[in-house]
Amino acid sequence: MGCDYYIEIYLEIEHNNGVSFYEFPTLRGFFCDLEMYWVYDSDDEDNNFYDSPDYKLLYENMRKLCLTPKKPIVIYENNSFTQPKFENKYLPIIQELLNKDNKINKYARYVDTGTFTNMEQIIKITKKEDRYERI
Image 1 (cartoon, helix red, strand yellow):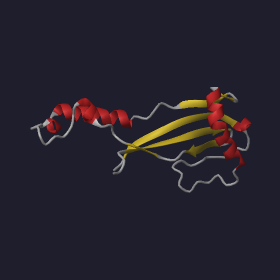
Image 2: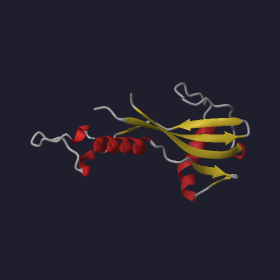
Image 3: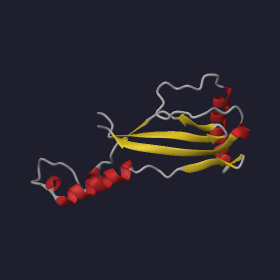
Image 4: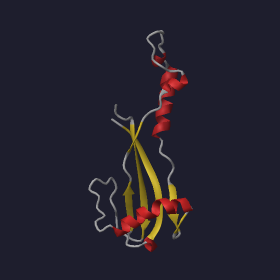
């Protein structure tokens, strides 16, 4: 069974020479099971709830909730990480980007507008996400 939607998480790294991106692997998302709201398909009952306006409203609200991305989080600003847990989690990723000779990702959705060579050049790092339904 395929997924219902995709979650793409990335770091937007603003630096003196432009903007760079670090993309995490795409996550697959699934709409929640509506059985917990007493919506289920049963051959024993004559239930036309799936055709009702109440079900359609419930389903559309669930879709809207699942496809709404989290708010962007600033993890680095003013030459320091905003929280110690962000430093532990994201500093190795930034160091990997700094040590990498070839920063070109041929499958990248976002195009870097410049490169950076040290932490002092970084102005701000924001963690963002996009969600879109599988077609």
